[in-house]
Image 1: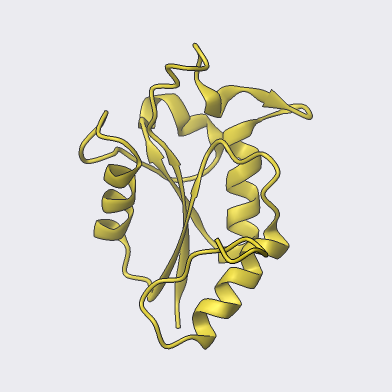
Image 2: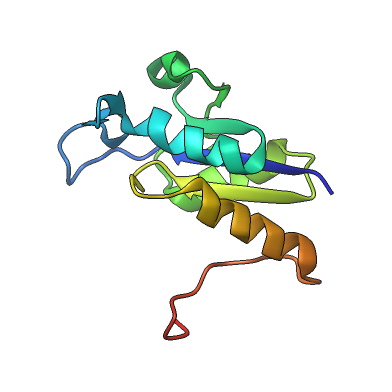
Length: 125
């Protein structure tokens, strides 16, 4: 089964006052850091967001089909452009996300019979 990765970067960052994806963490922009982890786990990554803003991140960028409509719109965009059986979708503002955890999600997805897999905390939430 084929899988693909997506990083959602379409938010307005109103609470931050600046583009979250462009914040520098440990010497690199957050968008590049998160995309690298997703790419390592999924084998490929596409950023969903403004192509002009994120073209320098080093990954394909696809404009959100319904900008300013929230993360559900980014998820919709990702699912309309993919031909993968499983899609790993991550927000750009998750700086501590790790490829090992993402790879684990992909392994679980490939082993399950459902149509969607979402992580859950140890307490079951």
